[in-house]
Image (cartoon, rainbow over all chains, first blue to last red; front, side):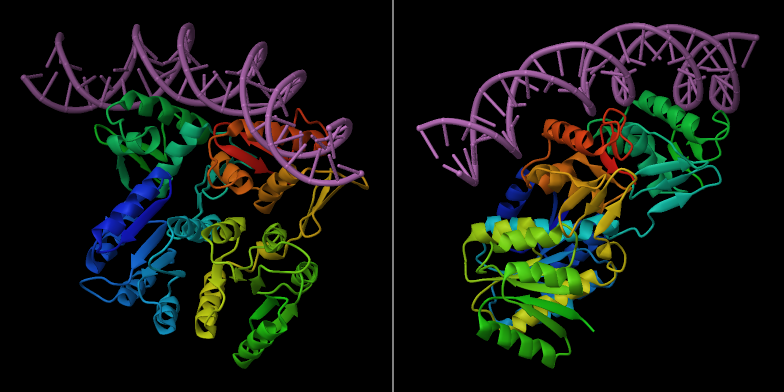
Length: 228
Length: 228
DNA sequence: GTACGGCGTCAGAATCCCGTCAAAGACGGC
DNA sequence: GCCGTCTTTGACGGGATTCTGACGCCGTAC
């Protein structure tokens, strides 16, 4: 699901955007000032940012610069200013698009889709690592492929999803609750038997010695960890 | 040097753009109709395209689709039409930005810079591939032709579009949702029966043994993959 | 030594997903 | 207005995937 960060200090605009975006199956975070926005962006890694330039605490262009310092996430600027200079400044600061208020919701959504589409196939913007290698096997996150000894390994959707979550935080412990919610959905959290079954599948398909795993480590009572 | 392709049938607009672009050290090609534009694009591989939708010989959106079949070059659309529908259609067809006439030259140039900047780090690789060959058949993305055993294969528009999307990300898994949204439009995403029907068509027309596909691989529950 | 909680394993049942086919509906050309 | 092509829709069978419960093992606490 695509995650959108909406930054605007006018509640009615935020409301309109949130409603429309959620109706179209986007995941939405909202901030009403620049400082919160930068924090949220760092914490949530949105796939696209919608930014109103008229914020109470800081200049909108500063927000753009703050984001561009560490991410290439598409930024779609909203503004009431129609002057050419404003647009040029925002675009040259790193914005991807500039829409003047009042705007048509259809158009905004289309521009949003365009921005997301452009960014997508490359590398999701945040992690540059698309392949992970171990002595036993290779995981290609972009192609969604696992190779072991020259042969592609077939994984079911659930197996793949679980592997993906673990590999994305290589070396770190991922709690059982977190795994369940990521793979099976937000309403799961206690069905640890699912994890046992699917971890066994993964180990059987990928570990050299499935009963003595080297990469898929169990942390009893806590969760699982992918070690490289 | 950045190469720009300008497509417009109004001489004075072309002149103004060419002068301004050349003054800023862009290399400029110009076309005054869609057919010439597509040829020029294939021959010269511009880094960015400025496209006026009002062309004498074909619909501007068709030009966008023609380009998008084989290249991800940024497309900046110019149009006198202000309606939301026009914009949405162009953007969803693959345009990157939409500027209504009359436009400010400063703004246009800023949007152009933004479009080029975005595309920069990616580029390099996949863009120049216009034909893909397998033992069974050859796909020419620019010419929109598929050849099998010396004969051209007739594909319907939908079949072609689906093939195009798959071939463009050869080796990578393309999710069902992504395929549906690319081929049928942004409002689709769950109609997987369409995919089943059209994948069957493609396999029947292109695979040596349609019931045991070598190139059009199904990843159950996830999507499809074109393997070469 | 024993009870208990957490984990791995296994196998059967229910469900989901895919490929296939055929027919109805929409569209465009003549 | 008719006809052919393309797209959409529905139904069906077979196979893969997911869910579920039972069982045994192991370490820890008492």
